[in-house]
Image (cartoon, rainbow, N blue to C red):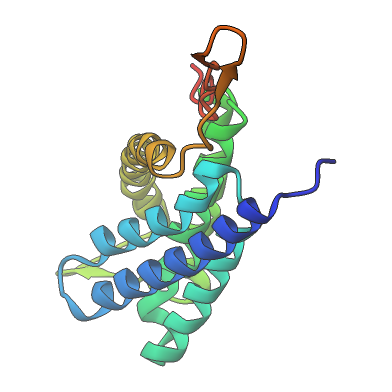
Length: 204
């Protein structure tokens, strides 16, 4: 295995710190700004996905761990941040990884449906976070799955689109060093082909 360069290590640490800070900010906003919790949790999920655009997987895991732990410390209430800790954080990392390895969409869908239903079951039965009453109607778990699964799959699709856009931006921001070669005998500059680290990343 190729040893990471000092530049890679610096980028990795920097992105981990930035991602953790942004994710924590978004989670905090999701708690205090009513009716926008999901939107801010999605933003937090995207924040910890940033290092994965450069294949810094450990940096993303560290960013998630820091933001999840500190979000609980800051709020002091696990229920208010459980959606990010159990679902939006992990699903972001999972989606970015699947895109990076070009996993077929239908395999992704199966895995994510199993994951989504598992998390919904934990939230409903263990934490009671989805135990809702609509008037005289008590919402059963199958109702949560029937509504929640397609909604969360749709949100995940938006997250994937956003990750693609973030990857393109990060390619420009952290482009590799210039690859120009000087041809001494002709006194001309010839530009090497610059390989796009995201070329072929987002396959069908």
